[in-house]
Length: 409
Image 1 (tube, rainbow, N blue to C red):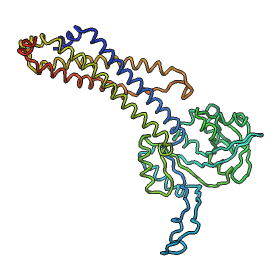
Image 2 (image 1 turned 120 degrees about the vertical axis):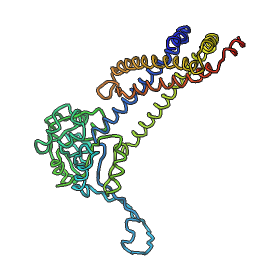
Image 3 (image 1 turned 180 degrees about the horizontal axis):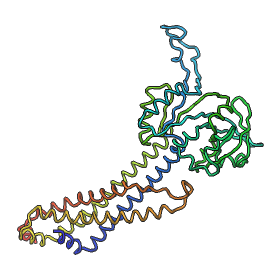
Image 4 (image 1 turned 45 degrees about the vertical axis):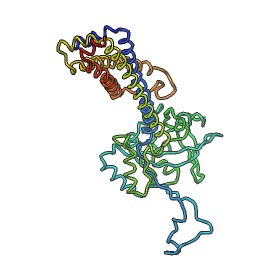
């Protein structure tokens, strides 16, 4: 049976080769397309999540409205405001920091957590100044939550905790201020008080919005610079699964007055972009399935029409309907199997070449995913399409009887 199936394919070399090339290119195209998309998604998640947090717990600002004062001045009485109250109560620290420590330590989904104190300040150096978000961190805990240490190009994260008034700044920020490593600059807090600090380390993530905006120091230094003794404004959390961040944040939010926000909730535009890419990838998968299925259906349908005499001979020497169906199913599976394996090899080679293309993000090269699931999915898609496309021609061949074939010849 297997030998006969191969013989049928060899007897139509042009159609077989064209179909084989279509399957191979379709499989390779899916692998390259998925590798590029998932590689870019991994890069985005790595840049936006692993340098910050999967989940951030911060104080919730309260918006003042009419509901804020309901039953405060005149209980059980309807109050019509001539000028409705408005404004915002800005909470600057967490309500129950110790409770959060205990909860996070007991949750098996949490890999690590770290406290932060975030304040808006001004950095000045000579005639240059710029607004900066100064983040106070516990360097050991911060290193377990984020991967920011790998982005430090001068010094180490732990350098900011080796003394007082030491800061880690972005490379772009340092250039804009005209500073240098081991140089000094001034920090102006919200009260207008000026403190000198020393630059001991420099980082570069490649994301200008981060490198130009955020500086790091120890929590004790930020507490002193911003006159916030003993305060902790944020907790950053790293989970086992980055994709469960939103569900976990929603669960925690139900039991606290603090704001609990996952990375994808905070960056809605990024989440929508990644979701759109997933839809595009699924549409591409469906298109590849159609291409593969149509190619196999086309060649098997021609084989059935051109091999009617051979089918009649096979039926007359003892092949039954199921044997005939199986013969043509085997041909489709052979095309799909060889095309899938060749396509996987071609796709892997193309990905390795594309990965060497120099661009301005990440490590300077095109981000590419080498997830084994991409190759497994490509193989299964092609094989499933091959079997599905072989069913109709195989059934048509199985319905042919020797008498009908001879009568119509």
